[in-house]
Image (tube, rainbow, N blue to C red):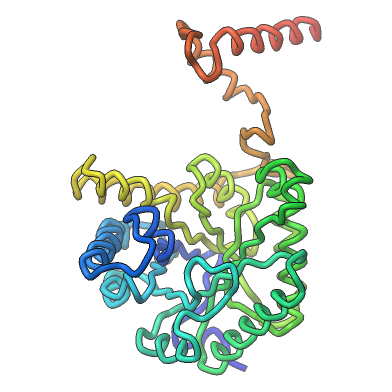
Length: 374
């Protein structure tokens, strides 16, 4: 059995050596959302999209060598639009990860069919990555087909002495979403248990990724349930990293806060939350390339810093991370109350999404309740 010391592309990330991946392997959504391409792209469109991915990578390069000691940087990029990036990644101080799946498909299939191994060998990445959407409520034939494809990839990776990332998405069915009324409640109350069930099923079928690339969790309890499932699964040890899911900064910060404090998490793989908005502004002519690169680098540094701050922040015994302020978790903390009170000073209630009078009324009720409690 191979050990980490003999593995040709280095060891697994860990709490002591987290891996921070800048993900830009999107293809289908990249074409449609940023470039309006729905069919086969023209040569000019391909050139523009490849230049855009090179811009993202150029923006990230100044981060290399400035991250906290012991941490590692990576880039996840595809062959179709990111060959130039893939060829330069290691020399620029990044570990290279590359996808094997067809982009944008609800069913896992290899992008290059039976030749997937040849394409991996041609680039010799540090990490092979596969994305699968898998819910225990999916049709049995779909679950069986996707499990078989993952088992095939797992066997190939192990047989060729490589490492791989399994990006597991557990999107809700219509019934699950209706039961919880919105995505936030589903994420908080049902997705952790469903994810644990998928991991158990896949591990039992012989699917053993080196790293699980997982959606963020709203509570420590939810994240710990998934970690415990991975730890108790058969097969070699695996680590976990957090994916971004194009979440807004406040939400993603919370997911990182949850993960970084737990043994078993070892970094993140974040993409669109870092570069999508700056790149869209650049393509629309709203800012120049230098400003775009600065914004992308700043966001990348922000999430690295957020992860390290959460990982090293002291926490009283027994205290767990709490939910962020969302529609599903509308808590009024002292810090948020201070921000609200400051924001509504002199606010004009006319034509606003949340009129100042409404906020003032709610805060007045809070003050009244406090007086009653004295």
